[in-house]
Image (cartoon, one colour):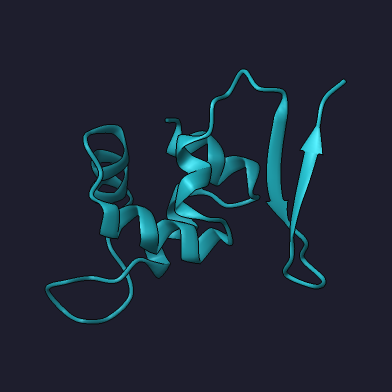
Amino acid sequence: MDVKQIIKDRGFTLEQVAALMPNSRTGQPGISRQSLYLAITGNPTVNTLKDIAEIIGCQVGDFFKDEGDGSATVVCPHCGKPVTVELK
């Protein structure tokens, strides 16, 4: 599970995602980039993965897909529907 790479593949930086992440202490958006990095390189909670998935426009299950299966699911930026892309 390479959450950092999926964030990058979706066109986001860690800084952008961190700025949009809910902050449990303040109730407002925004955590530090370092806090996000530590959360995703350690053992992220399901809630953290849900928040990231919502921000970058994917499903939580996308973080767990087998990297070797030759396919990927992306969300169409126009209609919002998932599209499966297969490598041949």
